[in-house]
Length: 216
Image (cartoon, rainbow, N blue to C red):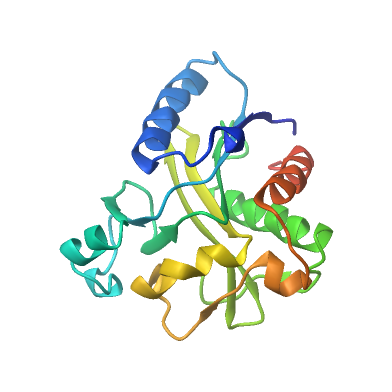
C-alpha cells in the first residue's frame, strides 16, 4: 500500500499534545475520506505517556520529579502501559483506514512490527524480531528496540510506534518500567548496527518499509 508521508522531523521536536491533536484532526479527515492513509513521522521532547490500563507503579518518579527533570507526563487514550518519548527516537503515527476484510487489529499490529523489523534489517540490524510476551520489536528476549501502542476509532488507526535510534534516547528511560515489562534493556539502532544511525536515516527507511506494507 502507498502512504502519504507527513515528515515533521525538519520542524524540530513536536510537543506530544500538539501531535495528539494533529492525529485527531487527521483521523476525522480520514474517516470522511478527505485524505489517504498517512504516516506521520516526528520526534518528541522528553515525554512519558501511559495508556488507559497502565499500572501507576511503572512510573518511577512523582509528578513533581518528572517536572523537575523536564519530562512531560501525559495520560493518553491508546492501549498499552507506560512508555518514554524523547530526542533520538523516531515516532510514527499511521493514520490508516482498515477497510472491509482488513478489520483485524492483531494483524495490523503484526504488520507494524514487520515493517519495523525490515527497517532494522535495512540499517544493519538483521536480528530484530518479535517475542511471545509483548508486542513491539525486540533483539532476543532482552533488548527492547521499538514500542507499539495503537487505537482504532471507527476503523481508522492512530497512535503507533516509537523506534529507538540514537544513544541520546537512553537518558530518561530509567524513569519508567517500559511498557510494564521489568528487567529488560533499551537498545538502539546505533548500538546494534555499531555505527551512528540518524533519526532522519531511520525515517527514510521507514517510509520505504511502509510503502511495502500489506494489510490484506
